[in-house]
Image (cartoon, rainbow, N blue to C red):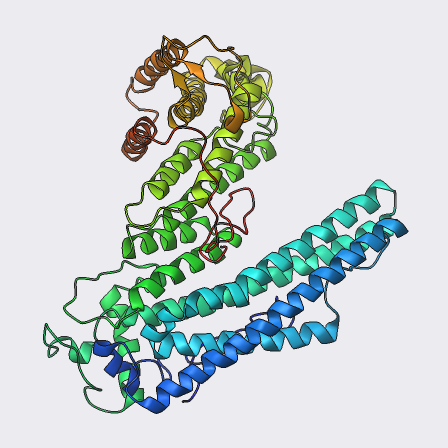
Length: 560
């Protein structure tokens, strides 16, 4: 069976070589909608024994490569540990270290590329077989997830070496390792771009399998699929499917809506595979900090499998990363201490994204079909960081600096720029509006952080009745070991929150939109109806490899 027209992907390159774009990504010859594909529209399997045996041979070859890559990874890890120990003994000298040699790296790249092509061919040729053999998960884990972790680790090591050299006054060493880190970062960006090209292609091809090509859309019976091409060979049908794709999808591409209401019989295995690949594509966008695209991919994945919690966990991770980015931007703009939402290492966790992340974690843990267990440990970290911000920086967000505008800030906002008389702008209607907006924004952030904190106590079953023995008033920042809270204390906090909530809803412009208000209701129901008590249990994460917002390389299925 000829190789499918998948984009040629440097799966292990990290950007070292030239980027090779999709040669057949626009419906080129021999695509997946050829003869065997049309038979699988009904049966979910190849039309001939020879093609089936060929695919199984590819899977066997893929398994052989996976074994070799696993052995190479173990050997590289052992070598890196020895190199790290020798650097400690020798004072942590120069050299990039910690990575494979050029010859070994080239060999690994060829193996990554071959594995990527083999599994991609199986995914496009027989969705049913691909689903049974978890080709999508193996493609992600074998060609991307591990490589992403390796590249990010090498970047971090070079950064650490540059900092150590700078601390010793070694400018040459700091410059050398700094340039090495920049080069690796460029390779990493290129690697992500190439991976996105491949995954967008695979996603688009699987979306095409959800509905018949335009040439068959009028003649296809509602109870059965076509047994072969409408007219012409495999290539003509693949071209027809590709030409009609954007028209049928409204130009949505891989991030457009998914409509499963067609009478066309979808090939077996397409929907679960597409569900996984949307998560993996979202993870790639997330690593590239394209958070909007990541959210759309995760949302589409959740539509394909609404009973699974993994996409909701990923949406929570993105919400936390958005909050971190917003907090960092505030610090970069000079608001990091005592200004609007000022914080000391709070990481932006006081912004509305904390409550949004809590909402998505609640959806993940309450998924009807398959809750995502890693969300429990992620949720505990979210609560802990939020409580730390409240104890260290929350009160400062409502301090005098928030309630007034400095003369310099007022001058910058005025039309005249500066000058002795421009201080009068502070008493203008515009300044009053800006001041009121700043106050309300700070109050909203404080309210949301307090709302999340109270619901941690409710979620973990820490609120005791009035008949329980009194507990110390101190609340530890470590949410998992925090002592119980009395019902009286919880009641007072709830009343205070309700009063703040009422004030935030007053006035011509509310502090919260309708979407956020609905999410707060869901969070309240989730925490109050939690019947497990005690701190969340850490999920085994065997299918995911993690999911922490603090470690961007964890969280997706297969580790994303």
